[in-house]
Length: 265
Ligand code: DGL
Image (cartoon, rainbow, N blue to C red; front, side, top):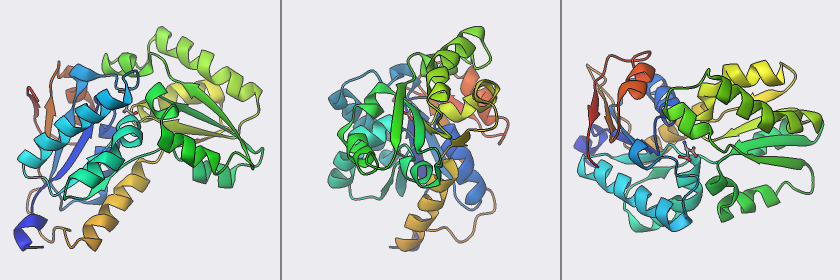
């Protein structure tokens, strides 16, 4: 791989602003790397769409990031990963990193042998998720719950609303009643809900969020492809969104003074 490829940015996309929970980990773990983040908020939520629609949106986002010179693509969305990453990997000549609900660490650590998974319908219904879950179903009980409406509220910036609290209570109380000891957040939007979730589940249930694991995997794959950048005087982050940018701006401004641009991708 020629040196100039190393200096290209990492491309990251999600159906909306949730993938910034992954972007943040990559930005911190890899301070020499530039990033381009796509928030496809116009098409959020992906989780209620068909597998084919999710795949087509993932192709559109990938094309945009490749046109903008990205050397690797991080699919910072469980729904897009579980429905499209196999296709993307077989049709593009560039490495892809994905994120899937972290059943394995939860299953290995669980003492009650009961774990909860909160994710979108698109993720829980995907064949990739089914396959992973079936590896553990003999040893543990997996309580699945679709997070209907959560992504929409997060996209509107309503994390601490009464509506959010009621929905989360409705989704999590049955899991608590079943005695889960681990809760897997199977959607990259959900880490922003952790304070609200903790108020409901208390401190006896461990929350599993795999943002840092994805950043580490990105580093490993860049390294094995000889794509890790060696020098950078000014780490550059760019954000593009195809809907109102206020909520995305308020999130990223906590970590960087980079600009958020409106774009029609
Ligand atoms: N952040 C996406 C995920 O991880 C949200 C999916 C959606 O838009 O429904 O699944």
